[in-house]
Image 1: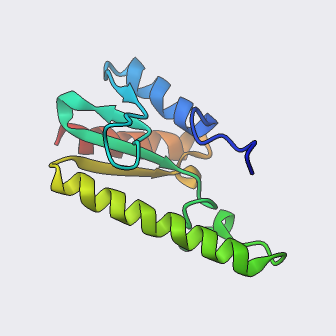
Image 2: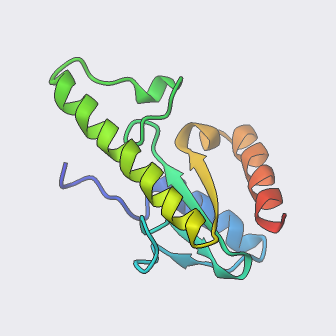
Image 3: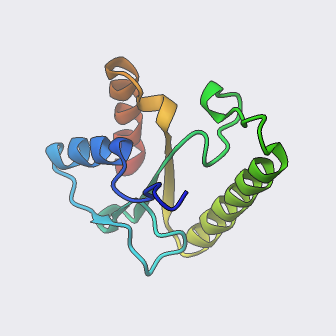
Length: 126
């Protein structure tokens, strides 16, 4: 698991490139904020998390199915991740930040990516 990168994943890079092309300027993985959000848009007081469906326990998603091997370990690990995500989001809201979560399955093809990013931009500028 140490080989699994938590930064600059392919979905993150896709989202960042799109936002940059649309004129948004951002910071990456700001350590001063709870949860080190993947993308921070200070001008809009908005943070974006790009979550992998498996690692963050996306409900009702095929990609979030737990392996049957060592099931209890994975169940506990994912539950801890979900709990940490909720805690970080609560802390960010208390600090006045808008939070947008983009799931890996929401950007898996061009059509879904376009629809998702359209909603994201609307949330950012709202």
